[in-house]
Length: 203
Image (cartoon, rainbow, N blue to C red; front, side, top):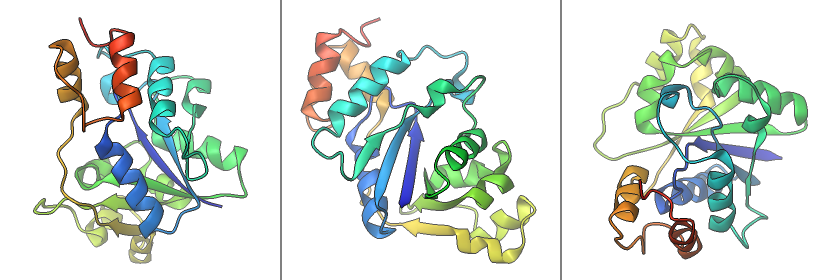
């Protein structure tokens, strides 16, 4: 199967995440997209984030009824240390050698990709699906593969995904929840209800 991976903190998941997943599913003709909450995000080791189980539950509410196309993967909870993408991919390739992997990232992350841990190794294990953001300058595929020490033909492992320009932010949703404001039209209703009932983000 052709499997897309969309990783993130998902604290909370919002419609921007879900739209990225669906556009990648359709445009790259994937069989499934796995939403993969980061257990210990390297760039947020000192940040206060919701528990892994809470973030998993919100994702499961978000994709309820759509399990044929989407699933929630908890593989990073089984790993030790910071949740580096290359290590997650190594584990997935070992667990599911029958699948082909596609890593879904935003265009802003493409600029940072050469600074990730083992970027060249990532491109040997997965194709990059880069979700375009209109008007945003970005590193070219040619420059990217040169920076991380791969031959020019490796740029074939990078595919652009077009997506309508939408501005959703987990930070904004947390702030709105803290102030008691509506989360309607920004996250699935079941997720908004879960946030309210569990009194998330009030502190």
